[in-house]
Image (tube, rainbow, N blue to C red; front, side):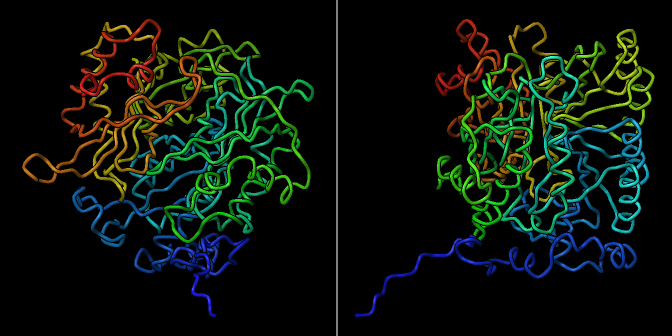
Length: 558
């Protein structure tokens, strides 16, 4: 009797199903590695112009070098989900500069500034991945930009695409007096050995990494594919606790500890092992199931650790301690003392928006204060390191006219926003200007309202959560909705009470949604004021916004 049972459907896991591509993204990656598009940019596209770029390079492989087409300026959010990439795309690019650990010298900062003013219409945004993001880039100018960046020791290699993206690193690595371990050598080793390696340039999807040795846990380790978090082993001394499988977007999942202690000497090899698992066992059939978090959800941390140790490391990792819950914020805003007695100064722009002119002036101000180093943070902030104590006041006075402050209001300090519809092809709503307007309104309306800690407000233009909406106190997801009369309406879905591990919350958690609640951009200041005042009136002593919003009745949250 012939069996009619179907064979299990392939998930495109190379180690189990073989490398046959199961969708168009996998087909174009198999046909030609994304890293190879660089030569075509140099030889053909930059000389023959935008129309010479092939479709798979334009909407695919160029991402391997940090380039996405930006949104056409005449297309509103009502057509975001209905038009194809060619219809949505302008003839200009967004470019991400890969800045692992967010670390630059003031000389490199001037290079970033000059590229902005010369080639990007003075645009420059600090992303929550410690990148600098330009807009209005023309393909004809890309070789000149690469040459400037690389001459200054920077790159766009694998800043986007199905690759190992920029490595988040503690902005105070090597300088903080209370640092557990300095991750700088590990980040440098990974970048030197593995970034641009064709063996790792065809992953199922993006792969996000974070490494910190600071007790503030300042790299949002719970939402990365791999994180190495500084801890002290009772016998082996300082090293790292290993976390895997975090990610947000439309299917948010927080990373899990594997319970494994990683020594500094093992760290790069362990990172390579985890990304190897993702490359070989990650799901490639469906793009929306291709992140590492889905594999971890199916395997569980015990199996994941076993496969890592037996198939990729050939040795067992020792068990280790979990990181201590932080007792300080991880954005490093303010003036702080370094281990050498000098100061580092954490400055807040407004939702990461700066410009080439601002970056150039910041380089001048930093050097006048005795500094040669600046770092960008995963919170859309920036730090000036190595400031002479007697020059701090002069630095603060110099950067204030640039829109940078070390003493921001709680709302300016804790508000983040993605690129939004201004440039992003996926967005439904505007974010940056809406966030800036909301901050200004809240500063006026809630001046004098006592908050033990800032209420974080994150705005995202689409469901993909580039601004981490599910782990904010108030997260806002831009959507095309229907009004009461059935007309199209642009509004935000509200998530409340998300957060990562902090002094007032022992465990990270995702926000809750309030049924039927939607807030337009015009209504946003009113809504945040209303829910903030409800929190202040209804909180228990010492209660966080997250804890309050998870227990409060829905009507109180509207």
